[in-house]
Length: 383
Ligand SMILES: NC(=O)c1ccc[n+]([C@@H]2O[C@H](COP(=O)([O-])OP(=O)(O)OC[C@H]3O[C@@H](n4cnc5c(N)ncnc54)[C@H](O)[C@@H]3O)[C@@H](O)[C@H]2O)c1
Ligand SMILES: O=P(O)(O)OC[C@@H](O)[C@@H](O)[C@H](O)[C@H](O)CO
Image 1 (spheres, rainbow, N blue to C red):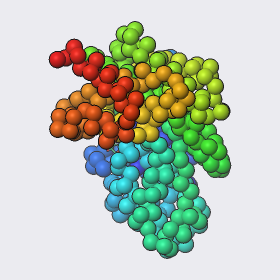
Image 2 (image 1 turned 30 degrees about the vertical axis):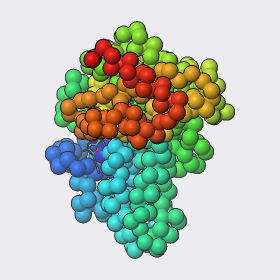
Image 3 (image 1 turned 180 degrees about the vertical axis):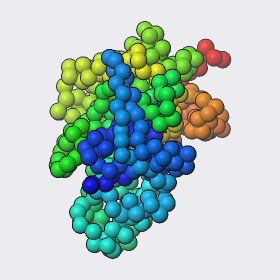
């Protein structure tokens, strides 16, 4: 039986990638850092996916297993699995790379047949390439040759809303997801791959469309909603001006995308964007603003979901007012439970917001002035 090792047994790991791999006939093992979660999966060997669409569909995923990150079993599986996937959060890929290096070294020494597929399913720009760079940094010459010959690092874009489980799940292992999904992978089709994958020769248009029109708009809604004390994305979208803000963000981003990628035109992107807002407003999914807004320092980085659209729209000579407002609202974000937001506000308090916008986002010139004007406007009612 073909084996898959998936790092990260969280919402997307269980509710999307692990499920599709199991459905394609892989023997799936999850690697995670939370011992209780690992024990629970290893004991039950199955879990449920609760899919929230027009109705509620419950799917039982069977025959799965779990191990702790870095355990002997985990390294052994890294050496013997046919597919290796991740959904851990991009900042944790370095830790995954340490395990992969040891596993690939063993695989090389054992002269094991067959290629290995590696796909990092993170919301980030070319996360698999980032993982590859972490692995290569730790590899010697012989292992690098092995990586080039036998390991296929495939960049991907993944799209499926997997909200926090509260209010939806009944069992500790239940994974909750919307019914929609898209998994786009760059490369030529791999025999026996999960059916849900779309294979493309150039990922950039699809990755940017997803990151800008889904995650960018999501962030725009969440940061403005948080300033208003609104708890869920559904409640936020019920406010007409927040819905308009999201649509405005998407419109500006879509113009940038259409200008950059000849594969797209504004009309198609506009209808894609409208469908995304419908997904966000799915009345069956309760998605918390704090989940969508999590880790603002990551989201404010250059090329990410807020700065990427700003640059694309500016390149196209289009208006960027809504995107600038979204960036400004992200700079205001503070959630006591979110370490990155605390760090952001500490930096703003010591360095000043303009310096932070330059250093964190890479802002300068007219866009910086636009974001600062929006920031002052958002702060005005507070002070
Ligand atoms: N939730 C969504 O709607 C969604 C959709 C698409 C993509 N993503 C992306 O998927 C990734 C995971 O998101 P999530 O919502 O599933 O988060 P999550 O917190 O539910 O799951 C992450 C899991 O990874 C585990 N983990 C952390 N570091 C690890 C490591 N080094 N090795 C193994 N496991 C580790 C955590 O214990 C947790 O179980 C993120 O990059 C996110 O951007 C999320
Ligand atoms: O997971 P993050 O923190 O990168 O982004 C939060 C949400 O925008 C994201 O999880 C979406 O729900 C998901 O990307 C939809 O496919």
